[in-house]
Length: 97
Image (cartoon, rainbow, N blue to C red; front, side, top):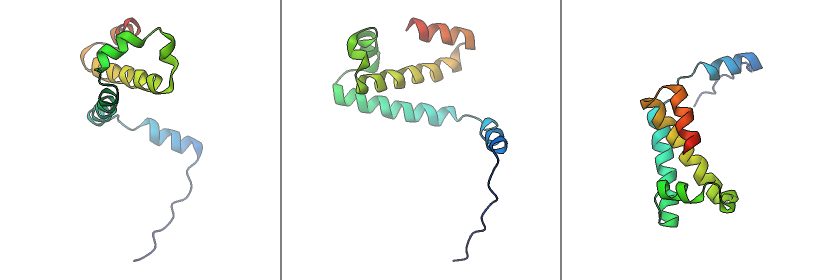
């Protein structure tokens, strides 16, 4: 197998420009978030919607697993709602929870 030629290293500016120009793949993001949410739901035998309403604002919210689940659910809401609501309403909906 022939050796691959090494590309010259990117500068910080080139790297940032390349990353910032990428289009987010919403379908892939939603799929990944749903898989992660499903894992938590199976582990704790509770749907994410119920968990979120019960846990937010309590001391248990700071537990590592619950914090990760909360962040995952918020990410899911943000991606999902950004497809339906204008950007300013999405931020308000997530803050209200």
